[in-house]
Amino acid sequence: MERTTLRYGVALTAAAAAVGIGTAIYLTQRPGQPEGVLEGNGQVRGTEITVSAKIGGVADVVLLREGQQVKIGDLIAAISSRELEARRDQARAQAAGAQNLVAELEAQLKVLDITEEQAKVGAHVAAGAVTHEIHRVSESLARANAEIAAAEAQFNQDRNAYERFEKLLAQGFISKNYFDELTARRRASEARLTAARQSRAEAQAALEKARSGSGEVLIKEKDVQRVAAERERIKAARETASLQAEAAKARVAELEAQLADTRIVAPANATVMAKLVEPGELIAAGRPLATLVNLDDLFVRVYVPEREVGRIRLGNPARIAVDAFRNRTFSGKVMEVAQQAEFTPKDVHMKDERQKLVFGVKVSINNPDGLLKPGMFADVTIKVDPDVAW
Image (cartoon, rainbow, N blue to C red; front, side, top):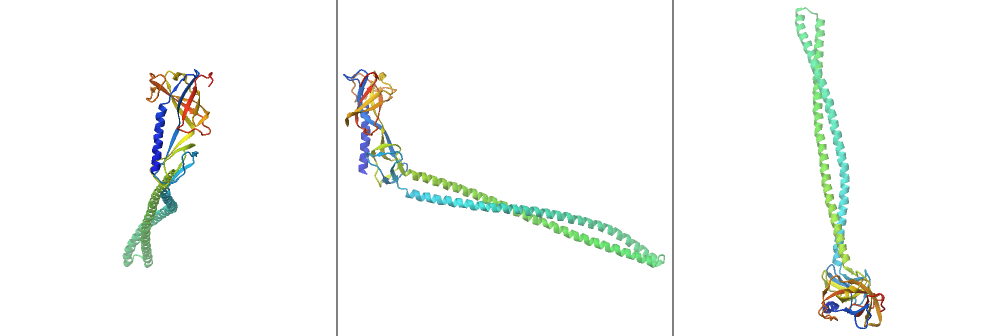
């Protein structure tokens, strides 16, 4: 751990030194050089990529060494994921359980749909039957009442005649045969009245029985309401289970994303400049694991006096030489010219000491073989006149 910290501190010190040296680089025309060529020196630099851990944990695997070339997507390090895997498996089980509950509740809803429909049909049929029976029995009662009224009228008439002619028979004014006929008529009308009253009693009993069927209809309607209420309860339970299933699935997706973050991969084709972690170390979220530099994107930053900056154009060709390869030069070109001047850094010694303002110029370097490395000192020659030979 101490060695890693020391190496990390050295890397930071070197980076700070590179910045200081970069500000000390100058470009100026030297004696004996063509009018259209500017020379200077500087330090090779590159775009640094700091690879960090997105989540904390123990480093299980560290596949890095300084100077190693990595390609985009290559595994750099892996953080222990056993706890996350266990939590993901638990969330998957919860999601499966909630989904099974949803399926079970949906099956119950289908059964209740059928039951509710049957209950509605039963209540409708019962209501229709009771209504029809009440109507039929009410008509029978009405006919019985009419029959009683007619029978009572006839009986009263025959009884009055019987009583009147009974006295006449005693006085000898009518014959015995005629009186017997009146007696038979009275008895017949009495029997008819008794039968009519019996029919009315039966019709009244039938009506009461038919009306009692309304209670059965009410019970069937209550059954419909009960089934409907149960259906709503199951429906609400299904919605809750569905939300729980969705939440569990989202949790699974979240944990799988975290598991993916336990594998740290190279974000670009680059070279490892600093390895900042060892296997077994506890890594905090956001901690740097390595510093990478893309060797295909190297450059040298130099400073141009204010009086010379007007001669430089974007795309001006350049040649770069380094001490490590004395017999070889590398091609490049001007890729950026600062839009704002800055005061001359104190470590820069200009040809004209009275020069106060300079412009930074960034020169890209073609490094197809990956020979150049950040930190190398380089001599830069920029051709500002296309007609002048190198």
